[in-house]
Length: 420
Image (cartoon, rainbow, N blue to C red):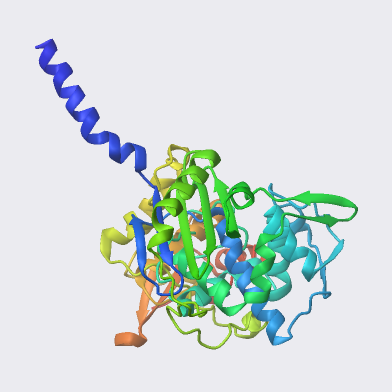
């Protein structure tokens, strides 16, 4: 009997080992000239982007520079909120000013969360509004499964992406802003008299690599997006969920070594346009409407959407999974009569609306303790949107207080009267 148990344990260990070793791990190598996938592992599995998020913050910054909304020397005043962001940081202090150029280099070289937040507030008014613009731009670029909650990549359970989406963003940066993209090769810069060094170590030792971004949180593991030029060949690689920075870098190098030679060697200089970019997202005008802007999320149905949203292999975030899971699954579809409500947003899918409610609930805590999350479909067919609301407040004063709190913490909020 003992021998049988040992044999059974060995079989189970062998069967589960690959899943355990690679849970949450994803990678993709793409020919940037043709769009051909040269190698892929879990390319559409949702993971947390960590500081890869700053790639989109930089995309919107470059877009604003080209529109003339800002210039390289435009000053950015640092708020207390931005200055208080946890590491990585450039070391900004509340009230100080830095230029757009310094903020861009701070995001690229130092991966400063404080600089990303300061830029977001400059362009969007609040970081939350800027994150909505980031998600809208992601959809325009064809990043169908990415949701941004903040500008830096600091932990947020609903902030997710995929290896494929990150490769799309990397190619978009190279294609749409070729001059600005060169900044991703910056190894160091001087800020306020001190030398700030980067930590994209693989770029400094891999021949032909010219960017672009690293990322890490406990929830995401070690992430990396790389771009390599070899003659006429142009390749983008993404590795998500690495266990260590060294293993992540080694895996990227091995994938590039194995697949770079498969890329097209044609003389064309053009990069693939996977999805044509529509009109720029006007982040500076986000606060013009009193109706909360749509919030997008990966288009999955039913329980798959819930599972996808919280997908991650890292035991360090297991504690947050049940709360998010329960919040999404228990969101009501029938509004109680005779109770005050508040609306924080509207989304193109019910799953997206539920995800936003879960995120707000996790932040607000006791402020929304007596309310219930609720989604309401409005419109027909492709024009349907889902209102994201909290319902069941006992009085107008209680609902109004919750709205005030949310607004002070960069959320949109509309007070709605009791029904029936």
